[in-house]
Length: 257
Length: 257
DNA sequence: ATTACCCACTGGTCTGACCAGTTTTACAGT
DNA sequence: ACTGTAAAACTGGTCAGACCAGTGGGTAAT
Image (tube, protein in one colour):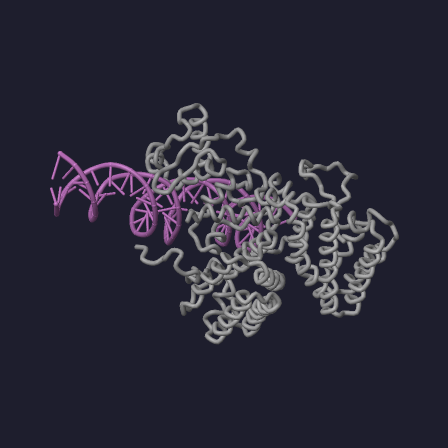
């Protein structure tokens, strides 16, 4: 609940992590609304919250900008021109996956090593709600599954970094699951991969878990690249595409009169 | 202009003037909208602004309430919530290294794969200024060497993440070099590791580069843990030192190894 | 080349609807 | 009368689509 809160929180994280540099222009309200799949009103409320907190400044007709002061402390020695092309650039998605490949592997490794019984229970729970034949819109369960594993690594830094990447991913593309799931064969292979990762962690086999998790992300990575190469455009949420609801039942957009 | 701003301002004045006592319930959004002659959306934006500033709290189905602790230190407790958790926590250092282990490996892998002649030149240059028998304070060359490799990976996301970790590391510990370098044997082994990584990248051997880089970080990791276990305390940067502090030369940052 | 205008952006506001919690009210059964 | 519970009548949360108001780039007329 409290979508606006969550969004303001995420955006702040993104800024603090350096995903959005100071003085940089944020995406427009309409873009954010579309990308994040919420109404513009919610975006505006979230932005006002950040505004009240002094994180951003808004100029009529121009846009919203990250305040100079806020990130001054977050990134003492910020060498700017490295990370400006992030938003929306296709390559960023693959760069992201390249990094995730490593981190998810490490997370699985550590999880198999350190998970407490509670962690294992959480992972099991997330895993069980993963297979529900629900064709589209199991993006959320998928994410929860990975999230549970990452948290079981008991490495706060790892959690934090991967969370930051997730946020960046949200701004970049509404991707993987929406693209891969529709293809039956893909879905089966991914399901199998998930199961093997799950089993490796439950069996406390760190090296196997790491290998499988790494391979999983790499598989997704390569699959998306193949799809794109074949001409089938990756589904990107854009303004002209009213979002055919890939995220499922968070809120049914339906029967509006 | 900026009706929402004006309203949030007026409401805050009202609260500060005692018109609304702490813990007291504010008028409902619909009431405010009617009384002030604006739409409810504007009211909501104004309230979110106050919310972000910590002036009010809102509870679904109940209403908005004046916060107990108004303004005053509302901004004092507003600093980086995530950094605070990390800094000073001893374990964080090891968590950090655990993550770096993966990312440096990946960076070396990609560098061996993608480095342009210019990249190689930069790496070579950084590598050559690395060995100058200068016992202490070669933290900077060390950092430049790693930095050159990371940038040669041509993955902006990777660069960004590792840069963020470096900043975090600065807050955590002034570590590795200061701790490890004094020990002659350590220094030799580290130098050897550096040379091998360098050679692997120059020879375009991605897998070797990755393995060596990972092993390198792990070696540092384990060495520090051993040192700490022996009772020799790791040199840590005190927390009371504000990070915006620009005392200049005292900064011997770049705790890379 | 300069100017003026138009159009495509951006944020700002409005309306009216529906969803989701919370509290009150009112009516049924005892 | 008393009590329970169900139905209103609140509250904030979200949505959709519209229109107004600044901003800036491009283009046609000068």
